[in-house]
Length: 104
Image 1 (tube, rainbow, N blue to C red):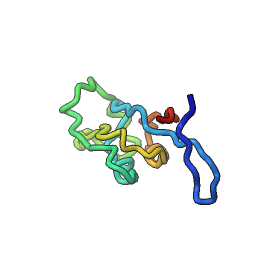
Image 2 (spheres, one colour):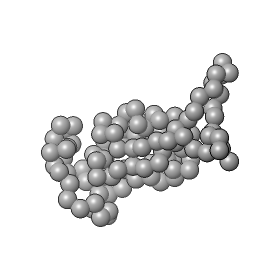
Image 3 (tube, helix red, strand yellow):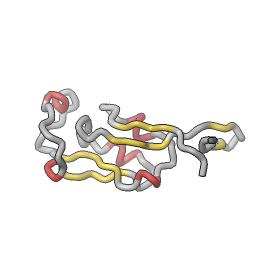
Image 4 (cartoon, one colour):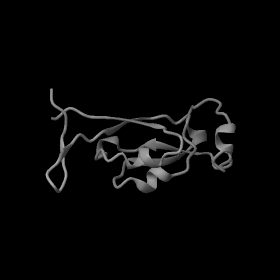
């Protein structure tokens, strides 16, 4: 089975990698992926509305965030992902996984 292939303006082929998962237990809710994404893939939600269990406040201290923010990213519409991986490149916690997808 073949994968989806993209083509640059110069005609060079590349394999886009689309978002598969977002680990909300790692997410610090900074919003960088949301701001960077050119599509409607992400949504910022209240951490208290999710059953994520206890999370380590030490994860936030390095980035200047506190649990007062209490927000976390979620995948709103992963099927709208174009495979640019801009979100992954700006995420300070590497919360997302991406992979090539089979061609339809």
